[in-house]
Amino acid sequence: MAGSTTLPPNEHGRKRSKKRVLKLSDVTLVKKETLKRAIAATALGNAMEWFDFGVYAYFATTIGRVFFPGDNASIQLLATFGAFAAAFLMRPIGGLVLGPLGDKIGRQKILAFTMIMMSVCTFCIGLIPSYNSIGVLAPILLLILRMIQGFSTGGEFGGAATFIAEYSPDRMRGFLGSWLEFGTFIGYILAAVVVTILTSTLSESDLLSWGWRIPFFIAGPIGIVGLYMRMKLEETPAYSNHDDSEEEDDGRSELVSLVSGHWRPLLLCAGLVLVYMVADYMMLSYMPTYMTANLHHNASHSLYLIILVMVVMMVIQPFMGMASDIWGRRPIIFIGCVGFVILSIPCLWLIQSTSMIAIFFGLMILGALLNTFTAVMPSTLPALFPTAIRYGAVAIGLNISTSLFGGTTPLVTTWLIDAFGTNMMPAYYLMLSGVIGAAVILLTAESSGKPLIGSNPAAMDREEAREVLTDYHDDIESQINAIDEQMAALAKERRDLVEQHPRID
View 1 (cartoon, rainbow, N blue to C red):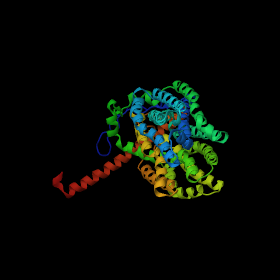
View 2 (spheres, rainbow, N blue to C red):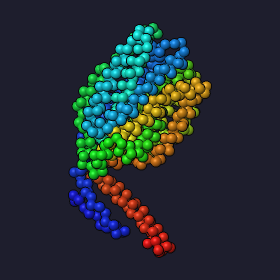
View 3 (cartoon, rainbow, N blue to C red):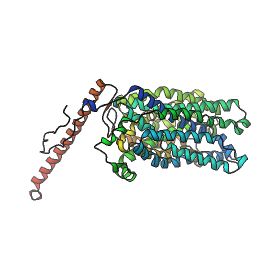
View 4 (cartoon, rainbow, N blue to C red):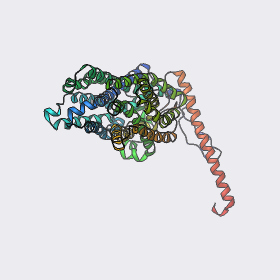
């Protein structure tokens, strides 16, 4: 192919603009070893983030007794989840600050910073004295550290998803992106295992005095390993080359221009995150507490079941991501949304039963539906935005929606159950989010197998690069033909109007 070409006039007499045709050398070849390091480092950071959130959620009842005085267990639980939700109020601020910085100074630097912030804050929570020791200062310190965590988390997931998406070849982005949330399951499972061991082996007094601190101290060494891995990462090829993009100018990196110029994909991102995070936090954070506090199931049994469900979800995860590369992101996400609408009530009936097998199947169905989001969203959300603003846009859209709907899910669901006096509220909440998610994904363009906006095609080797380049030009040509057909129809409509009303021409 020539370096540049001028396409001939189309059927309407208009000359198409002069554009450089992509050559084989323009296709980004992804280094396998670099890709593996990128996935491992970002997944470990995600595991660190969700280990902290998992421990906090699973120890919600214990933390409530340590930091919030009183005899009313419901009030303590609400206060604990209130502090849990407070961290999410800081996430949009973190996204607004750290996201655009990731576009300005690089993804790798911000991801290293968020790793430090998350691990230090989690470790420090384990150092806070109880309310009985220092009074009201204890919950204040807990709230401050949770808010700092929320700020750092605001730049974590969006950056990690962007990092993997920009490193991945086009045909494998769904599969490779699914490993990011694989780290989530590792974090949750590790949290559940540690909490289960502690609650099973320690007395109640030991658990309240020092046992609950142990999981938070684990964050120290995990954070050091994660920081080392992230400092060894190279910047993504898409970010390194994004200054050459013809699509974005420097002004588009500014926050005001980002929001005003890309409001539609931002709204789509927020809508997809809504159903994603409501299902995620309902299933993995709130459900163990719901089963113990509201259904009065054995606390250890509840955690064992959640651990087992997450192990199965880990097995499903990469296959679901692979399926999105084959059949598309939209069908997989749509199936998940419809599944929550149809199956949430039957699943909750199973969970409310006294049979452990029935409870497991209820949880497992919800978990499999959640896999449609955890496996596919990390590759779907970054594809909504061009390279120059991708980190910031994903971080802002994701964190605003997560703060409003995801992080508040345990708190809102607890309040709804108390307010309406029915334990079916989790099902109704999931159904509502499923309806919203289904509507949003129908408005979202398919991105499977296509280059990210503002980036050249990417492949694993030269043979795949040739195929990807052919597919890329075929897709562009089909888009041009579709536009030409629309223009032809408009031209015909114009001619008909002129013939009917000749004075107008």
